[in-house]
Length: 237
Image 1 (tube, rainbow, N blue to C red):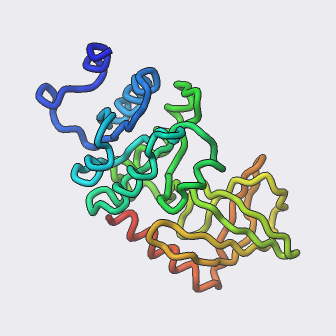
Image 2: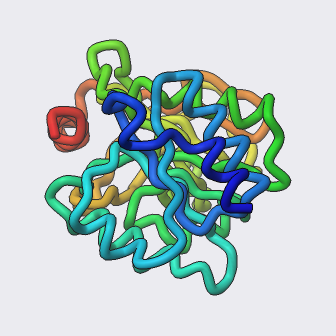
């Protein structure tokens, strides 16, 4: 197995420094090989970590990390280490396994995206393609931040439910939920994001797809500026 891994992962002595590095924490060999290939296509080096992951995320710089969210994987300790580290507080965190609801357990750490299991190449490539600019710090070309957090939604008719965020921008947010919302419905959404305390913003449903919706923030709601400041800070750091 060691020989197989060595043939996949680039050697620090034989390759030049990559533009960005992704830590693959407690990822099984079969999934690891596929993820290495996916990230390599976009110029991102992968580093396998199977022990002392939290300590390495505290002291080493990584632009992203993939964390196994399975039981007993210790993902929360690694997320805490990354988010409290000056160099990794804004690294892109990918969850591996589970679903959006299970990922909400870690919403305070701001998981950016989820790889589904069993890991399949087309879906994995699609996810990396959609997020690699954020990993590579190409922020001028990336105006939306993928992040998964719990969102409380209150519709104009008083209906209340919980959704999970998909992406957020200074102008709005996309949500995933099984609840039914019609276009142009006025809503009020409330959420928190890592260093952003809970904020409530008015908006309107601007688009809809099966089990997902887009909410455009109300331009007259001054509270949306708090979201913009957080996004600017996130991208600058």
